[in-house]
Amino acid sequence: MKPTLFYSRKAFLNYALLLLALQCFLALCAQAQGNLMMMPRRVVFEGAKRYEELNLANTGKDTARYAISLMHVRMKEDGSFQEITSPAEGENFADKYIRFFPRAVTLGPGESQVIKIQLNRSSELGPGEYRSHLYFRAIPNQPILGETTASKDSSISIQLVPIFGISIPVIIRVGEYNTQVQLTNNSLQMEEDTIPVLNMTFTRSGNMSVYGDLAVDYIPEQGKTVTAGAIKGIAVYTPNTQRHIKFILNTAPGINYHRGRLHITYTSPLESGAIKIAETDLQLH
Image 1: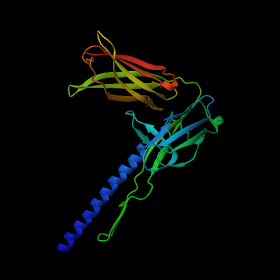
Image 2 (image 1 turned 60 degrees about the vertical axis):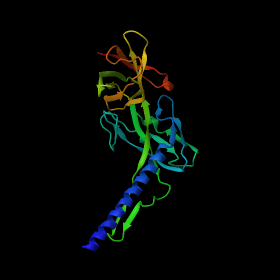
Image 3 (image 1 turned 60 degrees about the horizontal axis):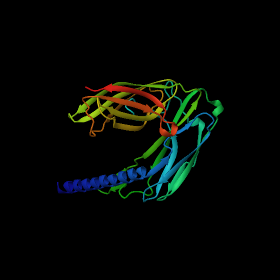
Image 4 (image 1 turned 180 degrees about the horizontal axis):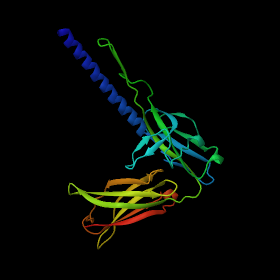
C-alpha cells in the first residue's frame, strides 16, 4: 500500500505544477494580447477605396509575435461571436477579395509595424456587403517551463497548446447603402434597488451592417440635462437583424431614475461624421 500512496502524491505534485505553469502561460499570453495596439480597429472598403494601412504597436515590455490570417465569424444577438466556415443566407465572406502583407510580425518593446491591406478582384463583386475578420494570433516567444510535462512514475505526457488572439473586421461594400436602425424594447431596471441598468434592442433593416456609438442623456422634469452613459463601437453585422444591449448607467448627482426621461442616441463614429442613425426616448416612472 505504501508504494501506491507515494506514487499518488508524486502524480498530484506533478499535476499541481502543471496547473501552475498553465496559469503563468495564460497570464503571459493575455498580457501579450493586451499590449498590442492597432489603428484603425476596423477596415471598410467602399466607393473608390482600394488600399488601407493598419498600424500595429507593441506597448509592452517584452517582444511579441503574432501570426496573421483571415477568419469568419458570426455575431450572435447578444453581441458575442462564433467562428463559422460557411455563410448563411444574406452573409458574404470577404477573404477571396482581400490581400494583406506581412502574414506574421515580431514587435520588440515600443516597436511598430504597418500591415498593408489591398482590395483584390473587385470587378467580381456583386452588390452587397462582404465581411471577414483579420485575426492576430499570439505566439509564445519560447516554451514555458512546465508546458510539456512527463511523469516517470505514471508514464503520462501532457502537452498544452492554447491559442489566444484578437480580430478586427474587414468589410467590403458594393452598391448603395440603405440600412436603417430602430431602438426598440427599451426598459430600465434597478438591480439591487440601486444599480440602473438599461435594456434595449437594436433592430436593423437593409442591405449592410451598421456601426456606431450610443449616448444616453438624462433629461429631468426641471433642470439641466446630464450624461447618463455611453458606449462606443456598437455593431450589428449582417445577416443579423437584432442585437440586444444591456449596460449600467451612471449614478451621477442630479439623476433621478424614477422621474424624467432618457434620451438615447445612436450615431456613426466621429471620424465618419457623427451622423445620427437612430434615437428614441424612454419615459421614467
